[in-house]
Amino acid sequence: MTDVPRRNWAGNVTYAARRFHRPSTLDELRRLVAGSQRLRAVGTGHSFNRLGDTTGDLVSLAGLPPTVEIDRERGTVTVAAGLRYGDVATRLHAEGLALANLASLPHISVAGAVATGTHGSGDGHRNLAAAVAALELVTADGSRLAVDRADARFAGMVVSLGALGVVTRVTLDVVPAFELRQYVRRDLPVEALDAAFGSAYSVSGFTSWRSSTIDHVWRKQLADQPPPPADWLGTTAAEGPVHPVPGLDPVNCTLQLGVPGPAHERLPHFRMGFTPSSGDELQSEYHLPREAAAGALAALDGMRDRIAGVLQVCELRTVAADELWLSPNQGRDSLAIHFTWVDDAAAVLPVVAQVEQALAPFGPRPHWGKVFTLDPSAVAAAFPRHADFAALLAELDPAGKFRTELLDRYFPRA
Image 1 (spheres, helix red, strand yellow):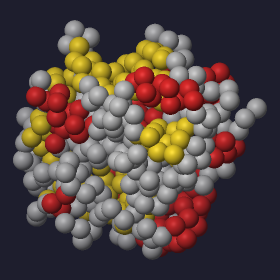
Image 2: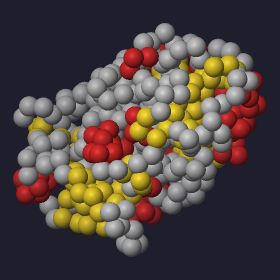
Image 3: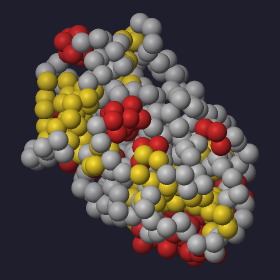
């Protein structure tokens, strides 16, 4: 069918599926799942590895009704899983509501971001999946399954890697609408990074690994707070709007220079309707215990020339702990180190392996939807509930309908 992506967003993965589908009703989806031997759902295609690939049927949920149902009494919204976060946030804002946190891209689908443990930034903010209050999915035999936080399995079913079924509806916690201002500061001393992270609602640091300071700090603060002082943490104010990747046009980015605006138009780094990030890139990301931040950054500093040679930009963020089994932030406050690499896998992959070796003493957990080469034993050791998820996978998908090569590598069949 038309309008089903054949490649991921970055273009580095061409899907191996034999058939592509875009069902328009839930019943059509259920019949499709029940009748397929191998199947995966694809959202907006922002994974950089083959997690979303299959040799069977690839299903887009973009044709299902784009429902958004607000429950003010419970403080939740239930949305069609294929909707993009930016679209959901815009609808909520019109009703005086908001999501407490968003990722850097508003273009990503709700189900895809949740399934991979994608996150925003902030000392007090958990990743996007932690805001999920309930899920509805179609399981391997075509049955409908609804789960919420009262279910003992729920913490294992939210960050699911798409391995437990096709998620069709997601219920998210919401908060009253609020406004933020965004300020960009230049040349933050590395020793001030921890203070910077705790200084505002959401904070990201960007470095090229070519200097001794953090190149830019993006502070997203509540609109009623005063702007940072002129000498804030030894930095200087950016003279005008900037893009995270040096040299790119900031027109794609959310408004800076302290202009107030709705949270959903400031929390992401990039604007809906514009090309997110640089477009031609690969990405990797690792989550370390927050207390290991200084040691981890020092370890990477020892290989800065190798990183800088294939890097577009590196983002540093903090994420609060949660209880979700496959979340990279499960049980620990984290520093997320995100690499946007050049679009050259042959040059990038050896550096990725060296980065992983440098971070190994700190127990890195990879972002499931990005490029990583960690040994399966290291990944299993880094996630305390790994075995519990493997058991849940065997329970809900015993025939391996939703399995992929990547899942077989990191969750081998018993």
